[in-house]
Image 1: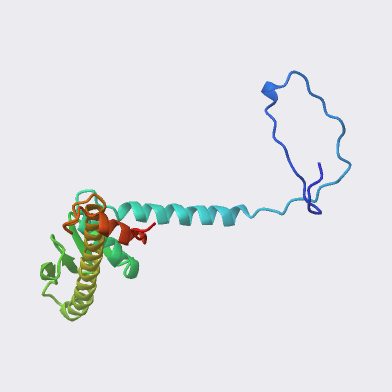
Image 2: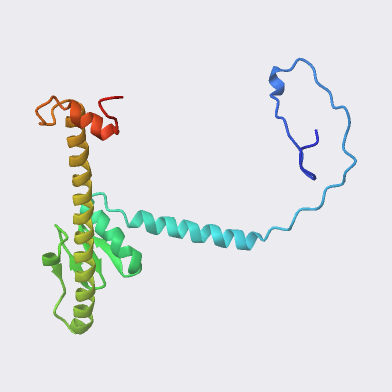
Length: 181
């Protein structure tokens, strides 16, 4: 059946298993345009790139590391994707190692011939770890503040708000109602 817009068609899908009898009334006289050619090499390349990307994502997961370790690894991987890896439960960025509990005091850089490069990497990693914990702390504070606010509101609504009147006055204020309504 023709659609409401030009060059569009409305389709109805009917399960023929529930039909007793059916027949084709007419075939279309319209000749369809040929489809575009598909570049199979390009598709294979894209598929291989996606498989490699997913394999790297799987390799980035360490089921034995703590949740904070996983989150920190993910954060570092955003900016230093090729340089970060796991070594048991330690996060390794180039030659710099972050051990549990993954804070700034647990960052280790070796003393060897690449010490100056490792010190620069260590300083950069230290800033990233500090920022991670700062952001994590502010998120936890925001969650705790929101949780405390909801708890206080629930106490007020249940009449245990500590207002001496059973909480009824606070409830009407929170709802924007006056006692005359």
